[in-house]
Amino acid sequence: MEYKGKVILAYSGGLDTSVAIKWLSDKGYDVVTLTADVGQILDTEEVKEKALKVGAVNAYVMDLRQEFVETMVWPALKANALYQGKYPLNSALSRPIIAKYLVWVAGMEGAVAVAHGCTGKGQDQVRIEVCSNALDPELKVIAPVREWHFSRDAEIAYAKENGIPVPVTAESPYSIDGNLWGRSIECGPLEDPWTEPPSDAFALTVDPWEAPDGQEYIEITFKKGIPVAINSTVMDGVTLIAELNRIAGAHGVGRIDMIEDRLVGFKSREVYECPATVCLLQAHQALESMTLTKDVIAAKADLSLKYAELTYTGFWFSPLKKALDAFFDSIQENVSGTVRVRLFKGASVVVGIKAEKSLYVESMATYSEGDAFDHEAAAGFIKIWGLPVKLWRQVHPEVETKVPELKVVGGAK
Ligand code: ARG
Image 1 (tube, protein in one colour):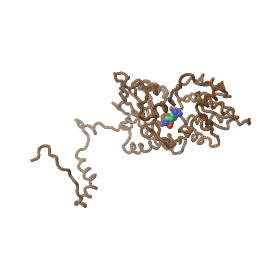
Image 2 (cartoon, rainbow, N blue to C red; image 1 turned 90 degrees about the vertical axis):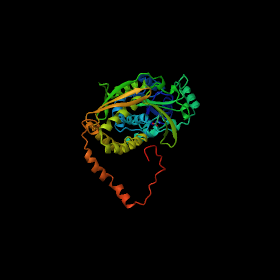
Image 3 (spheres, rainbow, N blue to C red; image 1 turned 180 degrees about the horizontal axis):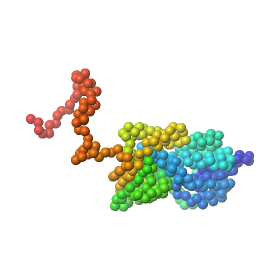
Image 4 (tube, rainbow, N blue to C red; image 1 turned 135 degrees about the horizontal axis):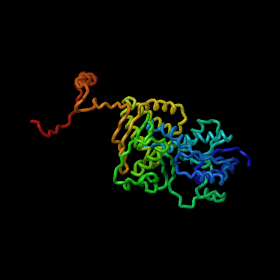
């Protein structure tokens, strides 16, 4: 077997990527694994040991949680990025950082390629490969699962032959991907869109039906668009998201169930649970409604769609994404304040907002004592505002305006 050099494999510790270690070794590569901790449930020692046992020549486990939050999650929150209005991109956001560190370790180890365990049907393959190419165009990307054409049984047989541990417990029917920003659940019974997601699909949220009968209020404080405290306790980003996942998850907040249009052409039934994410997006948007001007809010809504699209389709390391970040950073300058959120049986509702630089001026809005709005000015404003349609009617008096048969309910003689 001809020696081909080193390859850096993104390693989850699961069956596919474990088999990939052996498969790549058989092809003549020295395999170095990289396991990225982005806040999924992970036993770092176990995963490292397993990689080496299966045949990796070196195994990295990296705690990337803080960088993930600061460079991927917070920018997405500032953008209020939601794909198709529902998916907060939790899985999509983790792929750029995995690609970034695959490329980085490849440089350190002098590797000729990077590899991942994605199938040929998903979009994670697209994201990892497009991001890797964007960072190092010369580096080869190998996708063993896409290439090996094993059936499930053949894969298990190959694993057994090669001493690769095969899970003994009944396998979960779901395909799961998790990190701090949320958990994605696919496959199994969810493939039938008429089937309600079974309770065993969820791990971060309780069924709203079983959530406490009492409501809970929380206060989230933001500085320049970034959440910094819960109930006045200042926390770093990783702790804050984990804490909010716990609090909101206990009230059943954050379940998302949707039919999603994949980049690879077909529709897919996707279920997510993102308790912290849902609360933070709501609270952030509420604070923006108080601190941004109407035209900025409108422009932002358009750019937010574009941002979600770029994230979803793997264009994280692109000049447009970078330019959009600059726009969002600029408008977040005054998005500082506190939002009060009520959690109750699956729902999170914003019930109070206060901002350091609030554009909401009570003396303008009030209908009570202390009204500072210039009522007289309204008459002149309306005269000019409505002038285009008034002129139009004067020129077109003949155009009929149909009135339905009058239903007089009282008062008419
Ligand atoms: N539909 C989501 C996305 O494309 C979830 C992907 C989950 N990934 C996984 N390997 N299970 O971003």
